[in-house]
Length: 325
Image (cartoon, rainbow, N blue to C red; front, side, top):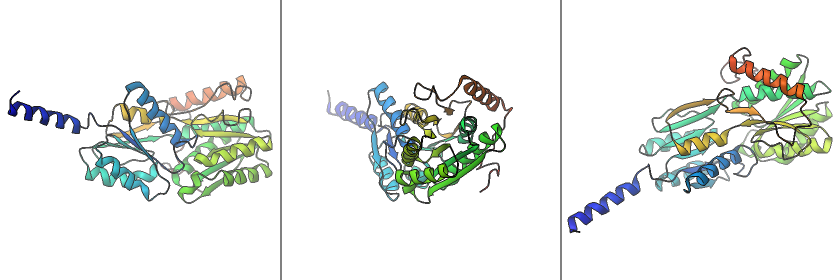
């Protein structure tokens, strides 16, 4: 091999090594950590599926405070990772900034829209899945009173609450819905003790089913339901196994599928996932089979079909000026 040929070969190898097509993907988990049994863990499961199928590795980082988001994403970009996936709406500003600074890399964000040519945004119709579990809560309730415990008080979580209330009142217009948010900062996603307190307060007022849309905080809600011999509804991941026998169902938000698809094939633009796209659903398995009667399941499946067909319109808190609190 001549010196010139050798130099060309080395240059070709260097170019291939720096190519985004060969770069490892990266994921930055949000507050609560990748083992929160909820939102972040769903994303982790999606990346693990991608890793198992491809035999490749990915970079990851779990932030412990909100100021770490940009720093973590920048570190991934400087290493040449692509796509870089930010988990959670809170990473939007950092993703927007870094996507502009590193235009040759691909980025993605879950639960928010960033309109840039190298960013894929994945959002969900949480109101549709929440409608179904709200209907199930009303059907299972013996008191006509159900509860909702949200995490951080933001429009996205109000979207869950709004859909839940619509579903409950669709079944029984007289259903009373108690609702509380855990807090106004990122720590609201990881406060099981506070979640338990809020759930117990709702049970004391007569609620006998409580839906938690609160990340790791929900673990306290589920424990309180078990201790009080009431029912709880999980969120994001299928959490029926967390307290089997007292988990009525879970509002599954397929963050795992979204993250897996991004890692497998990044597509810039906005992806919106609802019931029709299998982006949200209610969970059925051996852990809650005895709690959901055949009649209840039949009715919920019918509602699901009607939402998909457009026969039932579920208002979106963030778009339709609905359920304003």
